[in-house]
Structures are given as structure tokens and as C-alpha cells.
Image (tube, rainbow, N blue to C red):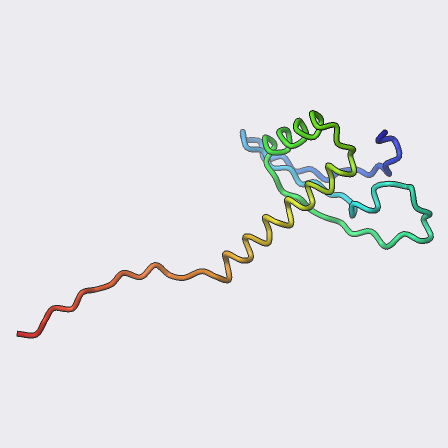
Length: 108
């Protein structure tokens, strides 16, 4: 299992501190296997996932414990990335300033 993947060089950026961030460049999850003929496959899409080194190690450790195939691990990473980016976009559009009430003094 796992030897049917098309290998490409990953694009990785390491920050150097304890919370190193990695950039993972991958293809669309459906393009990871060669089970379909090349002529009928859709064009590939690149996905960039940004997580810390600790998050990546924890995610891969959990995937190994569950015995997930590489394709499922990549799908989970993509879904996790999409959910997080949707949260960020949602938070940006629904921002409200924190306003304080100023009590008026009664006229004498």
C-alpha cells in the first residue's frame, strides 16, 4: 500500500523556531493515485497547507495509529485547511468594533 503514489518534490519552508511552519505542496486528493487512466483524469490542482511542525507530527502519528492510507491522510489535511480558512474569512467579514456605552449625566 502507498507505493502507487506519484512522487513530486514537496515545497517546504522551515522557520527555525520551536513552532516551525511547513508549506506542503500537493495535488488534489483524487490525483494522488494512478488507479484511473491518465487520459480521463481531471487537471490537477495544487493545495497549500500551512500547519506547525508539532501539528503535522501529531496528525501523522494519529493517522499511523488508525492505519489510514496516505490518500485519506491527504484528504483530511486538505479538509482541515479548508475549514480553517473558511473560519478566518467568516471572522473577517463579521467583525464588529467593541464599543463602550457612555452614560449621559442628567440636566439639572
